Length: 296
Image 1 (cartoon, rainbow, N blue to C red):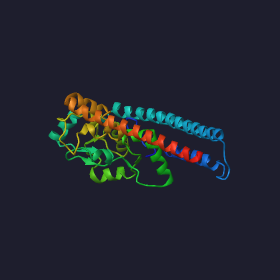
Image 2 (spheres, helix red, strand yellow; image 1 turned 60 degrees about the horizontal axis):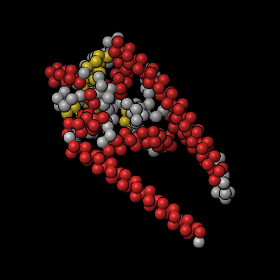
Image 3 (cartoon, one colour; image 1 turned 180 degrees about the horizontal axis):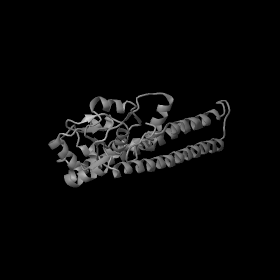
Image 4 (cartoon, helix red, strand yellow; image 1 turned 45 degrees about the vertical axis):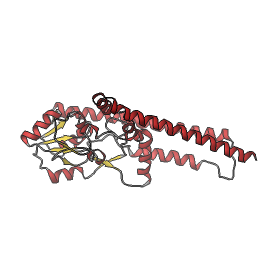
């Protein structure tokens, strides 16, 4: 595992990589610094002083986020070089979704699905083996809560992807299902986490690895026999973007389905604006009511 420095999965990135531990520590230390440096409630701070202090806190958090993003970019670039080398050296072979479908149906090759449960439960390839390499955090310690908050703020609310963490039992779980000489087609939703899984499996001694290029999202309906409540292409979308129909998959579907499909999401968008407008007006009325009470 030491040889593989997996980049963090971020919700609004193509691979939804999880936030690294030092980012959570940085966020916690920033919040702790801000709260510990505040004056006691008995002291009345001027609005200007409070605004300056809040501005300094925001600047510190933005600087921390920029440092994290730079590190994430460096980690991703390093991982891409390693993955390119695996493919170039023939240690991992590429299969298109159609080729993978033929290999499963005609040669009975197993497909290893490494997606998290949030994607798997929406759609999956029939008879595939599910062993997620990353899974949603279910702990509620300080570090995990900070990662969840950061993930939500940095795009999780839009994509619907929760904060993910590496499953340390991934290799042992694969070892229980498949021998080292097995032909394995490794797949995720978009193709990046499956490459990370291929690197881990190659380092663990698996030599007959096939990577599903573009992931299950690149598959057409006829490529695989799929199961689940949604098409494979839609398994990776969620959050506000899915609700409003603002994903590439939904736009492609609306082009095929016609105006009825578009009107559904247009109505949702209008509803969001109406609710936001009502909340804004309500907040203004509450503000005026409070001002009237204070003035009397």
